[in-house]
Image (cartoon, rainbow, N blue to C red):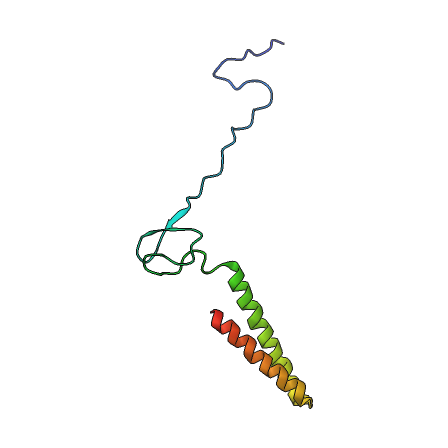
Length: 110
């Protein structure tokens, strides 16, 4: 049986080489302020021109801290109510006070 000849119009015999690697797109360091349109850094917390909150103002850390404080406040509130109802007034009142403080901290971060 005759062997097929390779021509430039047909794919080469053997494995196909992988496509060339491309670098990920570079993210610019500046972004546009949604309020005034001024260029601001992606690391900025506020726009230097108008004071609008920047991209880093609402970071994942602040959202997580707010969620933790709100969750702890709710748990202390429920625990304080249960302890007050079951007769342990001192621990119940301390838990209620702690819940109010934690919920106030979570609300202040909002």
